[in-house]
Image (tube, rainbow, N blue to C red):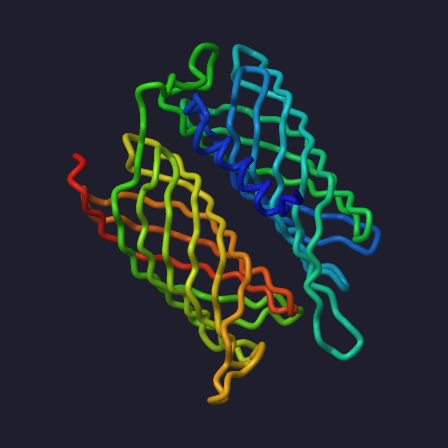
Amino acid sequence: MHVPTSSRIFLVLVALLGVSRLAAQELTVLGGNMTTDTGSSYTFEADYRQNFTRYAAGSVSYINEGHVVGHHRDGTAFELMARLPLFKDRFALTAGIGAYYYYDTVPVANGDTLNLHGTSPIYTVSATAYLSNRWYLRAMANRISPSHDIQTTTVSAGLGFWFGRDLKPTKGKLGDNLDVYHYVTDPEFTLFVGQSIVNTLFSETARAYGAEYRQGLAPHIDGTASFIYEGDPEIIRRNGLALQVWAVNTFHNERVSVGVGLGPYIYIDRKNPRTTNTLGNSSAALAPLVSFTVATRLTEHWVVRLVFNRVTTNYNRDADVLLLGLGYRWGGRPG
């Protein structure tokens, strides 16, 4: 049986975020330069890394490869890494290999754009200098080599934060055993406002809104039902209902949480109707929705949540929907 790429990716994320026995994660934001045969541009990257042992790690990264003539590409990389700690664990070298699922916006002859989706090998090397008990600097280079699209090299540097329960990424301090730690998210309702960006060469934008009900289903697994209104960026006017399953993890006594979700987005696009019913109204259509979230608990009940949604369509109207919201949790667990 064929397993869709997005489903395989989600299984990797569950392994990294949900069922890992270590709590030593690193979150890094980097920026730099991208080069390819057709030119060069900027790049920026958000990298979430899990150290399984002193010598092995896994990572999930969002990479934006900038804009060169005929290509606006970004995507998500999933890698396994070999790690070499040096100088009493204050410095580390890594080399990784994995898969990069990308979205490339390219022009077509009639003036419209085409959204290409594909998977590519990715190869990564990085060097990390730990500056303090929590903060570090990282330099990273990626080689992205798809067989049917441009091949690129990105070089970037940035600042990262160590989320491990212990204060230092030193030997014996790579994380606590989680046998007795079974976090389940309390029920939560959140209202959002933000922006949608259509993946064309002109990147049309609009004000977006959303509402989400979130419920913990099992340790480190959430389910959500969400309404998303993508606004009216002229070439689409889309809204719909999303049902997603999430792999989640928490830090700092459950004050901060991160996660990634996957599920169907049942939408109506009034600017691009798929079919119409007997009353002349647009019929609903279906698209995969992949989402990333970071949340911070303000009090026992109130939460600020940031969600990045990627709508993947089959009619060249992919979109990013970035939402920031205020949520309320209930369920009685101590704050």
